[in-house]
Length: 461
Image (cartoon, rainbow, N blue to C red; front, top):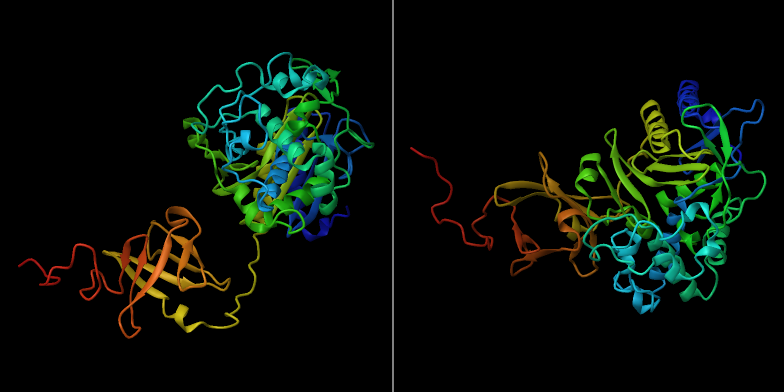
C-alpha cells in the first residue's frame, strides 16, 4: 500500500509519530507499527523499533489475536444475509451435539452465550491445537457457566463454535471460506492463517529487566476462528474502512452498522468505563467520541483496530510483545489526534433531488402532550423526529412505501409512525406506537388519549 502522508498537516504527522514513539519506548516493545485511515484509505504510516534501520512498514505481518473474531463475525453475518440462518436461531439448529446448543447465534457473537472464557486444559494460546482436536475438547464437560443471554462474558470457545458453524454450513474449512468470501474480495492479500515473510517475531519482555525471550508460534487448530490470523497495518487499514462503510461484495452497510450496534448487557464496571460489545466488535465511549473496533493479543503480539465513524478516522496499531503498551489507548489517541487537529470537512449541503409533498407536509413542529418535537425531512430519504430542545427520545424513520414509517434507532426502533388524516384528507396527527403527536399541545380536535378539558388552557387568578 502506498500511503499519502502529505495529506496530513506536518504538525499532525509529528503528533502521531510522537504518540507511537512514547508507546514503544515506555511500553518497551521490540517494534510497533501504526497506520491511520481517513476517507477510506491510509494517509499515514509510522513505526518504531529497537533495531536500527529495520522499521517495519505497512506490509510486515504481526499476529492479530482476537481481531480474528471480527473476521469470523463477518462470515456469520454473511450467512444471515443470505437467509441460511437467523441470528435468533439456537446453535443446535445448525450445529447439533455441541452441548452448548441452547445458545443463540447472536448470543455467541455478542459473548452472551454463557460460555467459559477459555478452553479447559493447558494454556491454549501457547500449546498446539492438536491437543484440542474436537469441539468437546475446546468446551470441556461443562461449557455453560451462566444462563444464556443473561450477561456479557467474553468467550474464546464461543467463537470456536461460530467458526465450526461456518464450516458446517459452507462445507469447507473456516480459513478457506474466509479467504474466498472476505480476504480476496477486500484485497487483504497479507492476511493469512500462518506467518508469511516479512513478519515480526513474537517476544516476551522481562518485567524487571530489559531482556527478551522468544515466544512459541502455535497453530491454534479448532481455536483458530478466535485468534489465529496474521495481518499487517496495511490490510487492517482496508478492513477498518470496510467496517465503517460496508462493501456489497462482502457485507452491506446495514449489516456492518448492525455489527457496530451494542448487543450485550454491560457489566457495572463496563458502564463506568463506557464500554460494551456489538456483534464481533467492541464499542466504547472515549474522549467524548464513540469508538468501535477490536483488540487482540497472543503470546508475543498485541494488536488494536479502532475507528470513529463520525470522524471518518481509523487507526491500526501492532506490536510484537506479550505485554507492554496499551494499544487500545494508543489507537484511540491516534484517532483523536487526527480528528481534533484536522476535523472532518462535511460534504456540501445539497437540496433534495425531488420533493414529495405528502412527506413535506409532515415536516415541522409537533407536540406529544406538552413536549415540543420537530420532524425533519432529510436528504437521504428518511425523516427524523427529535425534541426541539434538551435531551429526549429521537429517531430516524424509514419509509415503508404505504405512507407509514419505521423507526431505526433508540426508543422508537422498529416502532411504526403513522400519519392520520381526517375525512377529506387533511392531516390530523401522528400516531407513533400509540403516542399521539399534534400540531398544538393537547389540540382539542385531535384524538388525544384521555381527552382534553373542554374549558381549555387557563391561568390561575
